[in-house]
Amino acid sequence: MPFPRSCRLFLFDLDGTLIDSSEDIARALNSGLLKIGRRALALPDVIRFVGEGMDVLIRRALREVTGMEPEAQEIRTVMQVMLEEYHARPVASSRLYPGVRETLAALRWARFGLVSNKTECLCRRILEAFHLSESFCIVLGSDSLPWRKPDPAPLLKAMIHCGAQTSETVMVGDSRTDVLAGKAAGIFTCGLSCGFRGREELAVAGCDLIIDSFAQLQEYFVPPSDHHSPATEHASPAEGRRAFKDGE
Image (cartoon, rainbow, N blue to C red; front, side, top):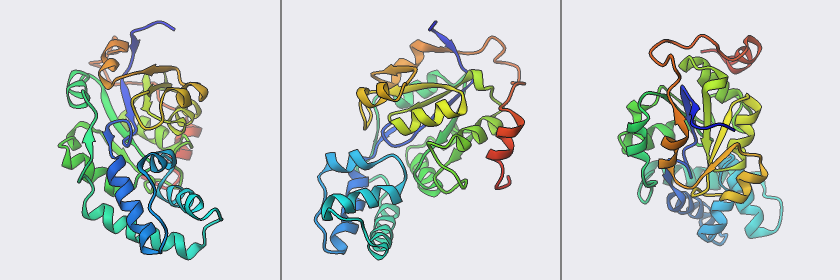
């Protein structure tokens, strides 16, 4: 596969890709578990369960601590406490991964979209806390559409909104969920081995390119030859209708 590769739009995951939010996620989750009399989880266990939305995280955590399928009321209580704790202190311990700010500045010839399985409100608050809000032309969270990663709908919506071609869009993430979403959307996938999941999970998922640091994006991607002109080739009308089914 020839590099450097032309790119007009980078779609980034948030947790494990732009930021190391593991301690804040673990703190909020464990507050909920303790509230219902369950034991707290160690940080490595929490990280194993992150990536497919807060509800999936809570279900996995409760199965881990009880050995049983969780009850609906337990899930609701943990969810409420977790959201309250996270909204109160969304970036108490979170940090940008090394090189993120500098690399985004170096890649300013491209457009950036954020596609996360964290709620949109939390995504926006976190970007604001790190003074990155102005860098992104679109922010999509788990509640922005009826679908979330690994469904390709959020990626397709982001491409249409940002005026990008499928052939010149890259999904950058740290997990199998990101890779599957990118492949389902028909775009190139780039995985960060330094994120939550590691190289093996990305490789097994069929990630097109795996890099070891965020700064390496500069080595593998360059502006399209017509980067001063608007893109004209978008996702297919059928894909677009699906991504916009909920309305703009």
